[in-house]
Length: 326
Image (cartoon, rainbow, N blue to C red; front, side, top):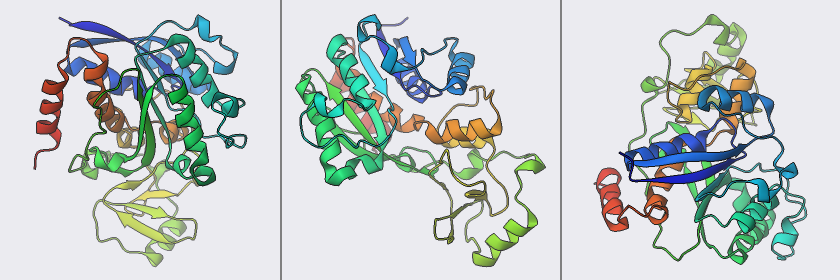
């Protein structure tokens, strides 16, 4: 029996990482989570989202009137990190016009959700010497929200992937929200890697020889990473998945590329999630997705302040006992 229902919207939803994270967090607290609106401009992401959630996201958010979006309790958005060239004059919302962040802000202004969680690349923190993020935070505060942000790493939340992202949390009322502490340890790659892999994922003999000529791994299993300088490093985890990375950017044990299922697992997507697109699109979708475990940890800390049937002190105590025990 659910204690209450929380409505949310999923902007720039991609393949639904935010949705899975929040629905899992709510389920653990006997709360029903209802997605009342989702949006993404990419047709392949729309297809994947519909195949898994039974709802096709709306298209271009810039063409959707904020008044037409249903009321909701919480807003999620992993907004694209396109250049913020016009931001920097500290004029709040006027500075963000022309960027996709403005569409988030106009929806928040109109619908006034209780809270929001936004996600972007780590580089946003230092963009234009920090001015960009200051304008974004000021814009959100000007809308009447208490705002905090932090750079979090998927590696600290059970996923064997070093993926740093800035997460921005806002709430209408002043609350005692704090970002979750790191969880240890992260999953072993043995829980991620598939036992049988099609030969099409293996690199050529030339590539394998080139990799092993430059580096021998002390970890097994490991994922070998080639940086922009051509140096090869290996770790018992993956470097950040990237949608536009070179074909052999990451190689398992220096020999083969990751399969779509392995990439989705590295992002925390459960195995029930249907992968219906080509390998190239799956790589793009995984590379653009949010780490489910990381967002879920943030949602679990925020949920007591959004739901009316949860005692924040009890939930946060249970969270600390579960994740931060020494």
